[in-house]
Length: 299
Image (cartoon, rainbow, N blue to C red):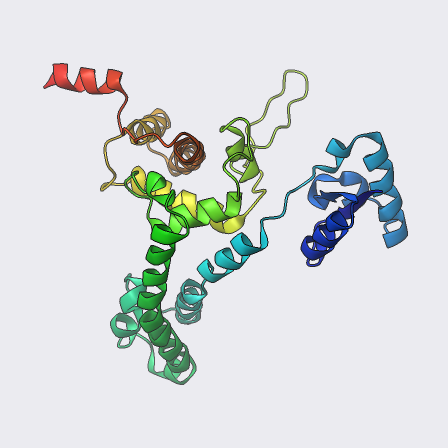
């Protein structure tokens, strides 16, 4: 039979089981189905009927998704850590009382913020700092594990880490989230898959500039945005991506909004570049030949 189901906690194993039984299974993304999410008479029975009708008309109307292979999902789960969330929670508790902690690396956070923490908050914050300290000790082993995976399980990740600002963690998160480098026939489709494409609201002559869709995996999107921030920052390597981002910032007179748009744009182009390097296996060149020629002439 042809079967449609919504993506959810059980859709991975259920779709896999039904597929092995010989059925054709389509896993729908309910966020893209206004007929379900915006239905004012919503019920499980009505949702099932809507899924069946859309499947019969055209499976593409269900915005189908593909689950990652079980091994890839298991490895990706290991990558997701909570240390940063704990650091953020400590900063939030202190800020709520009017205090402010100094900026510091996560690896040395407990040592650098122990003195500035107000005395009344110490009993509440001290246990969290101890947990962060223990996580920092485990992080070294965690980083070694990721490097081992990169060299043994996912050797193609070295193609992605050619880009300055893209480390092993980003490369593995990218590969494990996408799952299959042949997933997209066009590399540029990766931007929309990760929610880095602006929303569209065109109507007649009105074509407003909207925020990005934020569809897809939030961890990978955040990771790529952090890479993009580094690239357009003061320590970023001179490259076509950096020059494009700085040009956007300059066109917006260096405003905060212009910088935000430039960072998201660089993140989207970075995703396309990573996908292209993964599929082609080519050596990364930060500057195109035309740019290099101009630089040589200028020198």
